[in-house]
Length: 486
Image (cartoon, rainbow, N blue to C red; front, side, top):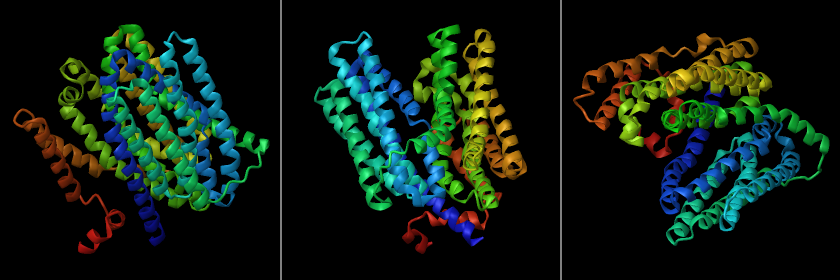
């Protein structure tokens, strides 16, 4: 019991550290994006968005799934860190340079003015080489469960990018200034990562073992496919709606989907901290892993269930507040898509559990199968229902993903679906929603949202959703002075 409690405390602290760095990014990057859009104008912002999108796709491809594989393998074999860092740094640098070459060729061959080619190439270079290396180094920190170093480098990156970029934009440097800012942030944060890595984890040993490279790439490819398909999942439906019904309806679907997509950062952040633990203990204690997953799914349900209920209540107000009244028609899509976290917040932890137990090829097949279901349904429904057809196909494929992953988890890791039943947060969310229904026309949006949150938390505690171990885990992440005063 005590051992499991200490594991829970360590994981909770790592989640807080990762969320700390993510909070700065979540606040500063939207502000920076608005500043970029206003300073560059429509054409310049379009070029900037093109470079970012291309670089991110090539970043995922160039990673080959190595960061996830490194976390799993190093978590269980920490004594080999010098070899992993040495050999795989060279491999990651080679793939990054190759990706930069592809970006240079695409930028050079497209009809762009000569004064935009260099900054667009530098934007791509900062991502595929330097950010790519930093993500690999962060994987080593995750394997050792020392997320404070990852949080530090992420903070350096975002502060430098935002600070340098804002100054250069305000001084009129335009796209060139943005490219320099991204390079500064990526290079310096990568350097910080490398210095900490060599001083705290051990100096790398460069053996250039081609057989080792081959084995790592073969093992990592399923992770790479999972990352790429997941990234492209929502974009596929947007493209299909645009092809069948035009850009207006594609914009309605995309605006609603982006709100739901933003919520994916919650389980992703959580599992960044949990996955190293699952990998480290998976070979020795399957029962401990199942218990951790049970608690993780429980905590995520406490977030996803009220979110879904709030979207059902406030979809028109959310669309209006985020995008403006011209996107009011997107509220119907948001009502449909709002149910997605009910499924994704459960299957994401289970997929990582399968990955930690070397069932990643099953995870890849499940994701590919459900992506196929999504595309097939969208091809059938989008020509008839437009953006609502895309929303329905997305929801059905997400539900299919949960069903398939639950089956795989039960068959291969013996996680019974009954373990994941969370009726108490579901009842609390329903209670709060029913309480707020008659108040929708009487209170302003933020007042109604405050009443909902207070009612949900009250119902959650009244139902005694959290046991003694939960409270001890929660208390462990509070500052020591606050705990001692309590």
